[in-house]
Image 1 (cartoon, rainbow over the protein chains, first blue to last red):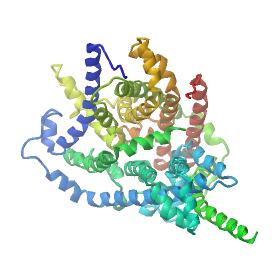
Image 2 (cartoon, rainbow over the protein chains, first blue to last red):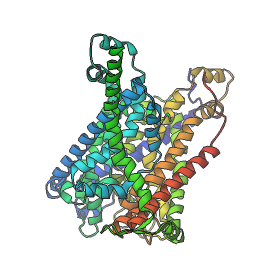
Image 3 (cartoon, chains in turn red, yellow):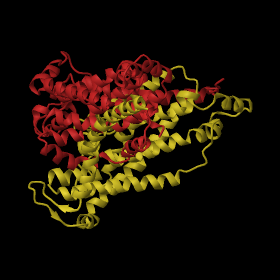
Image 4 (spheres, one colour):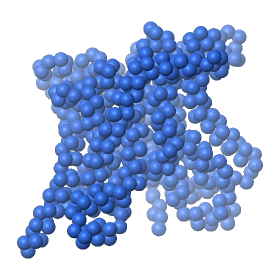
Length: 281
Length: 301
């Protein structure tokens, strides 16, 4: 039996701290929405916490979407996130399956190699990556970003999925082999569907990271046609020095935040289990 | 004999086909760039042409004479220290409060507190820029409520201490992740231990000191190491969005200085050398921290 907190004063204080922190977390989001509905005059005249004046400027959203080309940035982000998550998942799941269930000479070394690579700071690779992609003519292409992102999520995927594949019961596989299924058939028709929970966990964490990624995007993409959302947000905020369009900037932030918030709300439990699995190093 | 030979062959083909493509891909897009960075760090190279001058360790010698590198290094460790203290204190408190205090809304708070972690650091940087904005910012408007004259502090404009301003957004953005880790760790502690100590009449604080703390120490250690590594590798983004390393390079961190030297000033060799410095510092700090944080770990049966 959990004793909880007996002292009512202490209990109230702790509750207050939790409520205050909830406010600190939620308020900036609410504030983003409210400010997305204001014009410049309201920013300059009224307090930052003032409610937007009626009529609400919903047009800021369509303005950003059309005039700032957020329609294409949104699609770029969507394509790149989906492509690199799927490619990363395919490459990490296949290797994890073999390491987890078909140990061979050197399989443990291979596993450790991937794990150890997580210790290497990714910034170190930035400069060579730029020149590598340049020589492959993949600068300013979605494919280039997809390849780099997919590679950057491999180690984490292998780390989580090896453990996952190891935990699946051996009998299923054996009976599949008895029935004459090939190694590939067993993997694609039996093991992959069974490991869906693990795959989804890894996929969700990767989707969040890739959707939000900024540094690699900034370096590998300098043609506005191919910007992803975070890259454009960075550019847009620098442009605010000469062109003040605060309302549209907040609307732009929302276009970036809302999709990940939806993913988070739907897959909360998966995300928590992914974090926990990834940290038992 | 023959059949087992084919079976073995099939198995090997299967293993190869499932591991080699991944390994090749990983080597091309992650391992090769890392090794190439070590190589570039020994050249003077503008990146504009194929012409590269081999200068050995000169970049590293220059680096140690460059005051901005030392500034950046200091800022990086300042952020590491500030984030470790801020995040660990709050994340531990929240994790304990949401598991051991019997609060009805624990699940709700837990969901809320994680939200900053799913938002892009770029977005967080832009939002906090508006909090600090001297004319239309939140902080000045709030302070103005208590003063006669409107407050117009340029929070991000001081040549000293501006790095302090980058701590709140970094801590704000980091807590949820470590809270989730610690919650999972606390939930793994056998309930019987708490029950036994309840019978002895110990309070929450005593339980935290004698049960929770020692049993989740492993996770806390992992968290501290992780904060250190992600800060050294990734503090670049928040710095770049909020201050671009300014004013006067006072908020430069190693990552942002690498970016500036390489992609703005075209000293790619020097930039690569900073990358090597980041690698070296994060490895050395990991080893040192692991020594410092070593404690008798209690085996759970």
